[in-house]
Image (cartoon, rainbow, N blue to C red; front, side, top):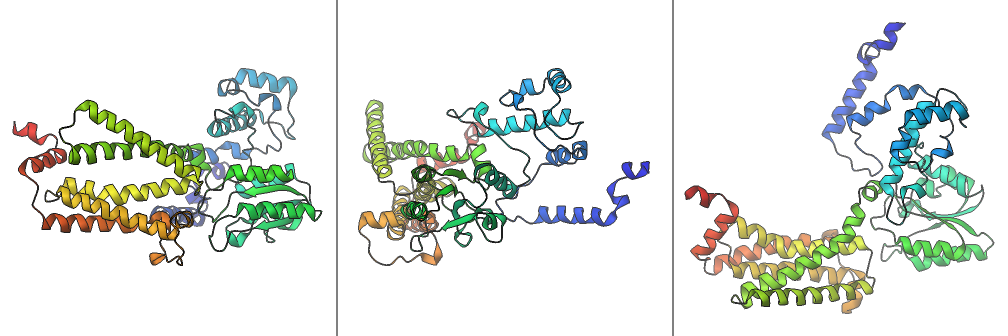
Length: 434
């Protein structure tokens, strides 16, 4: 019997051991982009397979430990003394270390999602659900009585099974009012969602909870707008961020927001240094260049503010579109300018104009807000099904082609420029020759 507890898996059950090896090989060979899956590090798998899995710990740690910093949670003398003095609310004994472990996990989860406005002490985390589905079930049970009206996105429009599908307990135990996308724009229509919530209330079925956050919807929800809709009908708002939780915890979404400032500086610098100083007035003094840079930064900032005030789309669209513009305008010139000595200023200039112009044209004729701004009324025709935010896919190769063709048709850059390119590619070459 002792051998059974100490023998390795491959000797006790070769079939299961082989299956684990096959699955490890499959995961190492294939990448299947399912947002609810993640690659757990070996240390995580080691913890999940530890002796803690032997414990049946129904219930939760003592509420008195909520909000405690990690140092206090890991004070074993304090925690064990409290456990022995007061016991706890769990149904089984032998959980004194489980209490510490779960409290530690809850605190770390709270710290991962805390913000300046909401500190970790004000966040209540439940780390027991194994996935998003039981987590949603726990929220249903905590906030809305059975049979209550809940609004969620239709599964066929990109929602999740737990948002009201009849195949799931949510659709069987609650009165589900499903909302979807606008079939023309393929985006959420917040006015229609709000009207649906108020209509349900008028019909005698007040909405108790609205779910935002999806499985197969590529745009970021307007959380503030959903908050307004929920408040207008007195409903809870459930933000289901299961598929983007990693980005939220890592600050990825906040980084996307801050990118706008970086883009402002980049564009202003390109206009002041590359366009004005290098092409229009190479003899400009440092003071004049700084002044021009500040003025252009203000102009670019005002232009960006004017665009943002129109609320053309969610922030991720704006950031993605900005990267398309930047890639189409700058990437070909940067690459060829460094790695191809024959590239000259005329090729680079016309290549940047061609790439940027093509990208802008495609967005202006396919993106709803830009079509409205420029009065485009013709039917939307996507080239090979490419979405507007990916317009850079056309601008980048065109930029490369124009730079190469124009550079070959115009005089080659002088020796001084070629030496500069050589120095950029190999910074230490000049020192070696010396």
